Amino acid sequence: MKHWLFVALLCFSATLAAQPYPSKPIKIVVPFPAGGIADVYARIIGARMSEAWSQPVVIENRSGAGGNIGAEAVARSPADGYTLVMGSVGTHAVNVSLFSKLPYDPVADFAPIALVAETDALLVVHPSVPARTVPELIALARAKPGALSYASAGPGTASHLAGELFKSMAKVDMLHIPYKGNSPAITDLLAGQTALLFATMPTVLPQAKAGKLRALATCGAARAAATPELPTVAEAALPGFDVTNWIGLFAPAGTPSDIVRRLNAEVLRTMQSPDMQGRLAGEGARFAPTTPQQFGAYVKAEIAKWAPVVKASGARAD
Image (cartoon, rainbow, N blue to C red; front, side, top):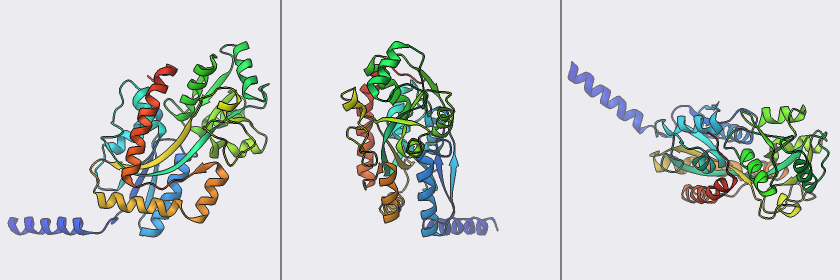
């Protein structure tokens, strides 16, 4: 009887293993609160996957420690393709230099799937701030050391690093106010609780266009197609200033390559659709298709790029 039961269990396990992927719900962990760019695009991709594969795709916002909590949770999850993370420049490139002890390895602990989107940051100030250009903002900060506060989406995020880089290059003293994500940071900026913010363009461009915030400049190497009238911080005042945010999908290391390839193909199908291309352009974001191998190389290059920048800025998150 015991032998028969053992054989039955083996057969059942083999049947489960033979089922095509996906055969059960998929979870995408967003290591930031709802409303930010990682959350928005995770939900879009999740909905498209669910439609294509007839399986639920659950989005779980698991924020904290600059994205480290959610990223670590996925790194420690089974490598079966059913738990993914929407990582960012913070979780997978900057934090390894910003935190003295990162609870995961951004390269060794993950299987890269695809780069989802890149977006330049936008430097915005509350309308009460008497500065309409970057040079005027720098002059104001120098005249009142420590009086201006800049919000960020949390330690280790691109908005935090942009602020620290700005302080270092402009030689100004500003107070850093970290939040648990872009949404609460933007809410307090709109209320005048902080003076300025370096935020991903899709999250603050609508408020800037509505006059609720004043946009001074973009933060990439070149002017953004969505806001061609705005100079970059580099051309306005600080040559060499360049902060580009990105998000990408990762699975735990060891996830079967065929599953990774299938997930990659679905991300590319979603992001290259006409409606998504139009949305990206309107929000100041862009998509470049990558293979898992290309995305992995991109992550390694980003880690190398940000390490000296973090060191030079003197920023620490712990």
